[in-house]
Amino acid sequence: MAIECQWMCAEEFCLRKVSSLLRSLVKVERGVSHTVEISECDDVEVYVETLVLMYCDDLKKRLIGENVNKVLALLKVSAAMFDAGINSCLEYLEAVPWSEDEEEKIISQLSQLELHSSMTEVLQRVSSEPSTSAREDDIFLKLLSGVLQAKDDKACPEMKTLISRLLGEDSFDDDRFDVSKDTLYHLCHRCLSSLVLSLSEATCTESSRQDRGVLIAEIAREADNLQWIVDILIHKRMANDFVKLWAVQRELAELHSKIPTMYRHEISRITAQLCIAIGRGNILVPKDSRFCLLSTWLEALYEDFGWMRRASRSVDTNLVEDGLSQTILTLALRQQQVTLLGLIDFSIKGMTVQNPESI
Image (cartoon, rainbow, N blue to C red):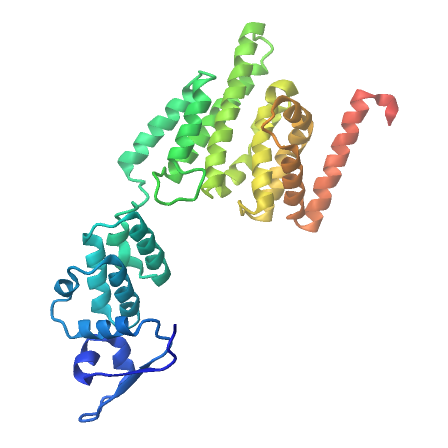
């Protein structure tokens, strides 16, 4: 139970020498005794023991034999008034073994105290710093590249799931292995180049039916690869630059329009991914970039939406529709009007082609 007013008398010179809090509370007057009021005192004994520690020359030796709970209590008080006590308590906690219950208490209390760099050594017992060293990043580049080049329809999805978990994609846990943004965007550019090349070859009228089938399969594989990398970027909140990159892929969008919908709809899923993330506020880019994204890819997404819905159970059409609506609503009013009028005009043209007498 908290004690509103607990009065403690202490020798001014000794305590002021070690406590910044007491230095600020006690005036410098020789021959005058002082009392310091500590309000909201949860445990008087702990405060007294903390004052005793201020008199000790060897604080670590004084703490030997104490249990973890006791040292945590001393740390809490020291954090408010006694820098040397903080360091000694942290050094003790770093050196002694913990039970599972004690580990949870230590992590919880350190996060509440916000001691920042002082607690790094202690927390290294239960976590590690994110690693994006050149050597490890190179390993991830080789690993990711190997998966992107794989053509085993069964093993490849399993490897992608495994690597996503390794990278901590499913949670924002900074303590897991990590890969650099540069590596992910290097892979994005590689996938984009492969897509442009495959689409260019697929539109060539000289290709045989067999060659065309191989190219269509390659298009689907490269689109799936890019979806995977984009998904990682979105979860790591690194996808802002990709929106700008995807928005200016006019050559790819032009080639996309020349391929039958049943073979190309996987590419439009990338646009759907971005719209969902923008609509949720997970990607923050300027309105001109959002407008450019829709100007380049909205018609393709509209055309492919039916096939996306039929061909893949993993596509949540409600999410796509909501994400697209929210993305349009984030634009300036004039841009919203241009986008919607353009989509209506495109829809009317499509209806005219299918049934000229209906208009």
